[in-house]
View 1 (cartoon, one colour):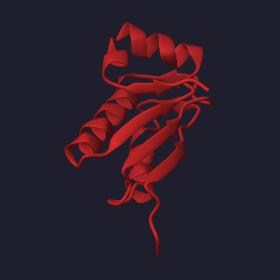
View 2 (view 1 turned 90 degrees about the vertical axis):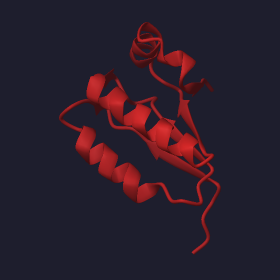
View 3 (view 1 turned 120 degrees about the vertical axis):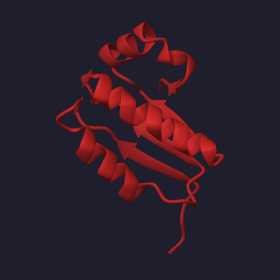
View 4 (view 1 turned 180 degrees about the vertical axis):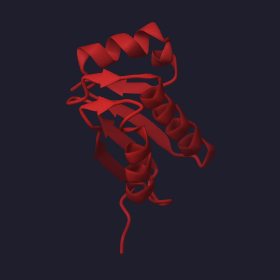
Length: 97
C-alpha cells in the first residue's frame, strides 16, 4: 500500500460533544504516519463546540509534533466566526477556495 502525502477528510455537520469521540476515532483510522498534511473540509460543518475545537487542537498539536501540518478547508461562516472569536485563527491554517 502506498501512502499519499496528504489526507483529505470531510468533517461532520456537527462537531460537538455528541460526535467528538466518533470523529476522533475516524481521524485515527484515516490519518497515517506517512501523511505530511491533513486537510479537513469544514464546508458542511455548521456547528462546533468546545469538544470539537478540542479534537482539532489535539490533532494540530499531534501533527506538528511529527512535522506534519493541518489545514482547515472552506469553513462555513458560523465556524469561521467561532474560530475567530476564540482567536484560534492564529493557530489554524484556514483555506478558502
